[in-house]
Image (cartoon, rainbow, N blue to C red; front, side):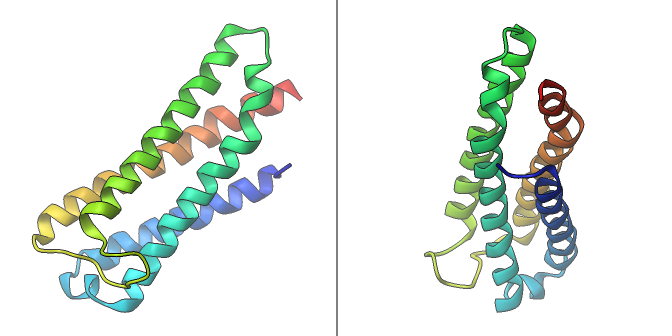
Length: 142
């Protein structure tokens, strides 16, 4: 079983990378660097790993609760996980070349910035929702 400390550390690392990448991506020339692309690939991996960890460790207690509201929270977060994974996949498909390459395909920097801002907002909102709603609810059942 994963600890809340580990989950919070993952969330902190993802938030930190979000902030760094947001700053770097504003400069068009940074988007083309191998270092920036490597950071972004690390970001995607961390987000996917975190969602998988939450999916694997958080929902069983909620789904087995007799309280329908508790069940609905689990179902909403599970649905959100599917949606975040889909958004990440679509983002990678549009902006990232073949796996293993450390470059982004950016023809329109503003469009890329809009897409990354939206992606980052979704991920940060998910982290906030986990911290404020999911973790306290799971703790209350244990």
